[in-house]
Image (cartoon, rainbow, N blue to C red; front, side, top):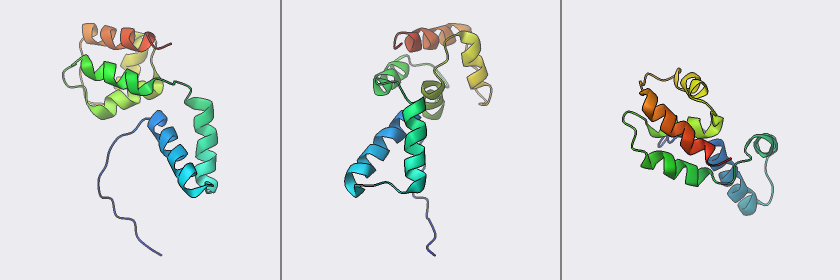
Length: 112
């Protein structure tokens, strides 16, 4: 059995994963069991078509201390209110002021 070697770690959103699975499906013509189950799940969950535009918009906000993995998680969850955003960011050791949180929520709500 071969051992997997991690070359680099990069956070991706469920929308990015859905695109990657589509590329693999084109290349291999068929997905294995786990990949096909993942694809089924993503088809139910990942319905946002403009995730890359949303990512660019959140990056352009230039919010201090907000990292790429946190932005990807915000895109995955798509919080509708500032309180929802607070819940999403509780798992990270980051403090973002209320004004910045309001900007994030307003940016996300534009994509509905």
